[in-house]
Image 1 (cartoon, rainbow, N blue to C red):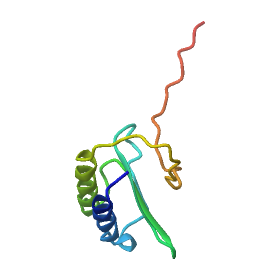
Image 2 (image 1 turned 30 degrees about the vertical axis):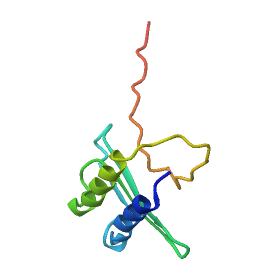
Image 3 (image 1 turned 135 degrees about the horizontal axis):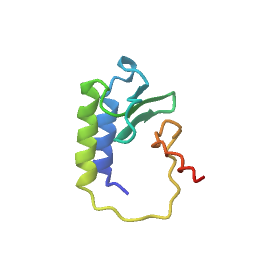
Amino acid sequence: ILLPLVKDSILQIIKDINFNKYDSIYDQTNLEDGESYKLLLNTEKNKKWIYIHGYEAPEALYKPIKSIMRIKEAQDYRSIDTIIDFDDLKYISYPNVPAPPLNY
């Protein structure tokens, strides 16, 4: 659970993103692994999100991601017994698993 000040800092970083300026998906399809991010702004009126897999999104999107990651890395996390809604996770990219070798 984040302290209110930390949570407010993260929310402000996300609110400062102009979601209308960017595409919803930046998927580097030739990348089998790598980092993925989903920036989500969910308000009572609408939901805006940007999914990034790889390194081909506009550079301006990586600045808020780096800020959030710095905040994340500075936290002391503890487990909780709460179900968390991560929204739609259909844009999570999984690596291709090669077929097993054929034995004749």
